[in-house]
Amino acid sequence: MQKLILRVPNGARWGKWRDFQFCYKSYAKGFSLKVQPYQGFFFDDTSLNGIRLHCSDGSMITSTVGPDGTWSKAKTCKKSGHLTSFSLRVQATAPFENTAANNIKFKCTDGSELEGDGHAWGKYGPWSQSCKKGGICGIQTKVDVRMWYENPPYRRRSFLRDLTGLNDVKFVCCN
Image (cartoon, rainbow, N blue to C red; front, top):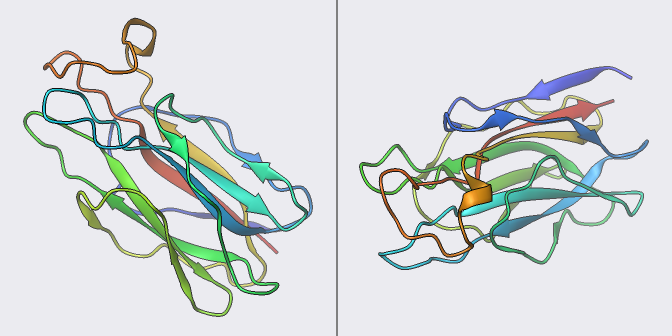
């Protein structure tokens, strides 16, 4: 099975790349997001914390996921379609509050677009390459894990405790 890695150039810089995870002999037909709701001016926002792929065999996969937020309902391609490319919404580095990745859009095999239920902060970057044959079957995330162990769920904002969640993502095409 030939694999192509899909990337975009606008991911944020914090965090570490984690392990790839794959759908087992199937493609991703949809996705859901783990998003922290807006915390208010005096609290730290991490925004997008995870992406879960829903595979056509009924399984679900994630790479590393941040601790904040709740999972959205799944968004899926029509009929037997699957995900083929993506665009990531990222907030540029800010002086007081950084959220990094905030939302994602995918294209399906029929050309339709699915947008996640993340925040509208930042802007979408360019679309990734598209899977030529087949579709997206794997995921790898870059997640900020700085100081999670010493921060309660509702962190006060400070220059030392401005955490982000998911910063960047790569997907794998399988033929």
